Length: 389
Image (cartoon, rainbow, N blue to C red; front, side, top):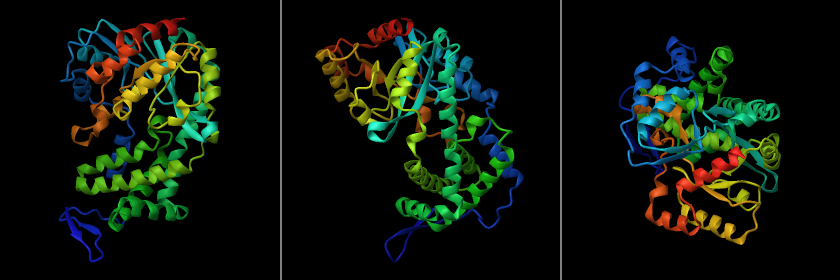
């Protein structure tokens, strides 16, 4: 790819070879093959072996906590083997899956990451809900609420398609192209390709796992195109799509979600516990006094304010105003499906690991944790007690 400066100072791009042809919208066998690969739960045996045998091993880790991670479509058997290999000398653990809007059981525990609505701030937020598995075997009301949220979130894919393909999305596309600095050739290629994906979804909606029909489908499909086109060209497509997705999400009304208070009430009624994840994204909910057990002060995408958040929790606990001691958690926010991708197509999320949170061992952070009588093992012990209570 060669950057070319235009007379107006902007940068266009010329591709020396393999420039995608965008004229035909006919769906080919290759298009179908890519679609079914991008929507498949099937994982080849060699990839399973690679996941079960990680190269990074942490023999000095004596306890493991993981209360914010996503198994996606990978089996718990494979995940269990990976955890055991990574932390061969871990003697105590608290490992709870938190799939988006889907309650899952793993060993003694069950968990879910729930999208909800903070009415006071007109803001979509998320809560991690954790349970002793015995308490939610028949949690029909909660499961019904989660199904409603799941289906509403899934409808974003249709809005994504509309924004990219329909006349009604023209202004949004223009805004996205300007913001991302996207050349016309990229916009045209994205339009033709997404029209094909949309048609394939319409034809095969009942033939693929429903959890694969979401916004990530477009990313997965375009990642597969790196086998056929210049990867840098596809990266430009991805940048343009990310901006469109951001703009679509801003138009997505949060009013169809349950309120945070409704979720808290249901979880508490089942004897569950709650943690606020992604504090950098959801600052207002930290100020709302919502009834939670803990705050996630670190994850790979939220690390800037870790020390500050710890100090806030410590001071709040000293004030004695809460119903119970507010705990500190750290979330690896691992998405296991990312690890199934071909190595050259993986993004930085694939580097995240269940139960690996190096901030616990950072000397500066340890100092602040000690001021609040916190360490990893004490959090594991106290949270287990609450979950079993």
